[in-house]
Image 1 (cartoon, helix red, strand yellow):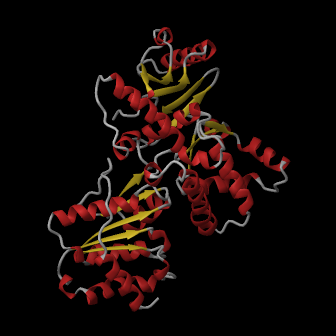
Image 2: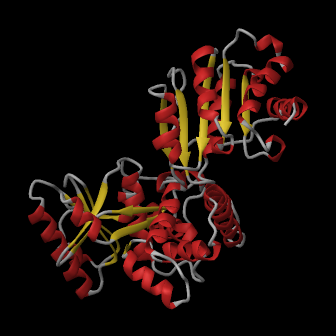
Image 3: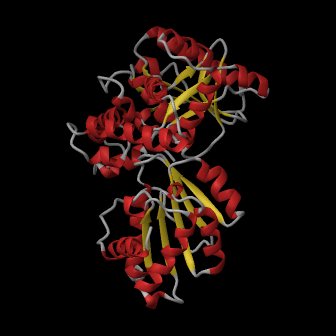
Length: 424
């Protein structure tokens, strides 16, 4: 890569008008003295968090030429090696010599595509008057690259697709307390949210285009974030595993059973390869695998994991009818709502199943789409009673959508799904 290419990209970045962005609940912190990282699934809105932060800087009087945004997946910057990274700042200084000695804001998108970026960022942080912000679509950005190489010089935030509250803001749907008509709108919006998910582009797109965009997303994530990144050889198996995950969200995943099912379909694969491929899906933020809530590591290892996917909309890329199976989608939405705020989540299953709890037993949740069926209601009552007995000092939460009034009178600590997903 030569300096002319870099200068062209830099000049275009500085001179380009910033695209409009909608404010999110997560804000990019300024003046921390740290390298700030944003990690999350592709298309979740990390880049637009950069653009929003840059717009705020402009409003504070920071000239645009003091901000440099680079996307390392830009084909004009590829291939980029360790030695090319120094050329970035040198080319920028040549283009904007007045920036020498001034504070610069450096926004680096999809940094996993630039080998050695973390050591380069560490040196810049220690020697230059810079604020550095990075994004990546791999959990290694959280667990290894930033925390290990930068050693206390970084803070990292996870970015998820839109929460339900953000979804309403993007769709310009107001939240009005104690208004029956507004509650009806919120309930209808919840169904749409569960059908199509929270990727910002999907939320703003025409409904006819949404399936096509989601199919593009799944292909991009499969090839760019898994097959290419990890050199996956059995692409067909990887696609089948991805399909299985998104068709079975909020379900228990037994690797031994999955291995048998795949073998019956003609796939020749070892259990170790399945575990490895599932790890790739987790690393790309596409799935979450929750252990059973047990103190024994051995019991956790020998019990199935509960699988949740990153976004309900991606389920529609693998299913013909997006409106089907809203119960599992709602359970995943409840999980994601909690996961945005805390890690270490589990499930519990014995004679009954607790959909979601934390490792220390400080909270538990059960979710049900429709309480109209007496058998469903009895099952949920048994589960909540079991949770109250297992964790007597903890308040359980029961989240529902459809109901009959007489059913609600039998369930304690129940909250409608739309209201729960708007909670803090």
